[in-house]
Amino acid sequence: MTSTDQDSSEVLCQEIKAVAQRQRDEILSCAHEEAEALLGREGSRAIEARLKRLEEARAEGARRRDLTLASVFVEARRLYLARIETLLESVRIDAQKQLVSRDGFDYRESVINLASEAVRIMTGDEFTVRLAEKSRSILGDFLSEEIKSRAGRPEIKVTVTWDPRMADDGPIVTDAAGSRIWDNRYSARLERLWPELRRLIAGEMFPAGLEGSEGGIT
Image 1 (cartoon, rainbow, N blue to C red):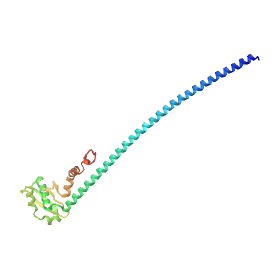
Image 2: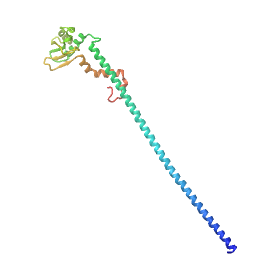
Image 3: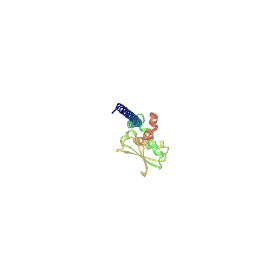
């Protein structure tokens, strides 16, 4: 091989190496660009997914917070109403005790008023007023005329009987046939009047307990 041929071969080899180097560089450059693009796309997806999870977590946190606040409000309301019920029941018990002990009122006058109230309202012209035997010594044996007079019906007949089985807390009035009965004992009157009394007492003492409470104080 002549010197000229050898030089030509070396030049050709260098050119081939240069082309290969350029192609390699282009391939690496393209691969790098594709890798960056791929990582960019995956990164964006990851960020979007993370943001979505974060938003879902915030929404769930807000939902749980609202549920907790609602349950706390309901429980506080329940305890408040239960406390009111307890206080109202204590008022009823105290009233019952005062009636039993006849604290603050004249028992005889009260019995006459209660019996005459029933006689005044009931129809008929003959009535029986039943009282406890144990209260006979206090009430005396001359109640009939006083009851008729207090009722404003002097023309009717009123018979007073004494029942050893009754508690001495007021009269039970019946008509002649026994078909109409007016239980005007203190315990019976308190039971009849308590719903309205309870509402009035609650309205005066606990006005907040009457506002917007389903199944609460009414």
